[in-house]
Image (cartoon, rainbow, N blue to C red):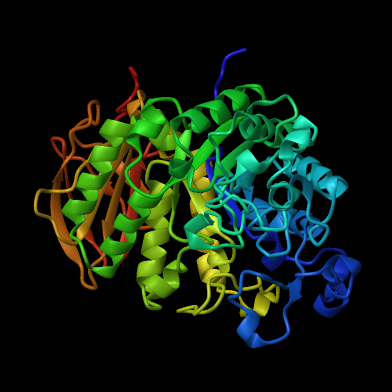
Length: 494
């Protein structure tokens, strides 16, 4: 069996509790269920609860199933569901059990329904996994603290003290993830812990693959270390020929993809560059250098498997980062889809959730369509279709076309072996038109070749390997050879 990870072209990331309540239940009705009456489980009571990731709003896995037609309209081929494991927090951070679906979100049957329905809609399921820590109420941690002296008398399966970093014999002090005592940090050097989480036949990583999972997005992957990531990736190979591992790496990540530790990364480095460019903090030439370096050092395939995004559960929404400038939000969205990598939509971004400058990231999705930004939705739908249908946008090489010292116009080509599939992407962040003469070092684009704009703008013509173009203010152009143009047949011998 050949290992060939099938990373989706367009991924939609959602936090189930904030997305949709299934079965037609109202929020108060849903939050009155037994699953919300457990000790430590908090439910939303006031506006102030909107941003608190610990407070439940009532969304669940059946609600995600009901929303699949909306996601299908966006061209989504992968659904990234943040942690669904049993935990008291609404975002399911700090797991009590990595094998069990939290009852507030559903159960294993609900997850199975989601897998079947998603597959029928042409989507694969990716789970978020935070394996560097657990909740303080996890049985492993409770057992470790209660058997500090006589653990040796326990059955080996019950000995969990080595799973954690205790600082005293009495287990009153321990290492917490980012200093948070409620999230005891796991000691991933423990072979038994790694067997339960990553390497065993019934490990968490493997078990969810058997339940229909296509891939994992590993949080804080760089903090787990090389050996652990290698074990996770090797286990992924047993999940099927198309299974994959995406790692959330905070900075430059070439060694993680070149050494075979990850199939791709959440491309945070590139996200910072996109936002900085749209904010006016860096020139186009600096962003083009970032892209060229990633294309060179990550490699085409790993870069195309990585996820290009503008917002996520632990960042500000892009509209807030750009202070409500919706022209540049639309431009950033266009750029996200055109760049190498899977385009990742954070839930609600496609309809302008939270308004022009949302104050909170983890807002409940508003399913009242009268509140949606329908122009932005149509923009996402067009670009999602192009990302899935235009081969160069999903799997092409990156060719830098941005002139040296350029400030406002970012230009690049996405190419394949067949020159008819070439895409020339141009982005003007300025609030005024920009005239440019661009040199295009792409073979087999003949003199006089007519180009059409997939974004609906005016066409253009290649002249001796150059393109003279005027770009409207804050605009994007995606040019491709116009194979239907009347006149000369440019590719008749291709």
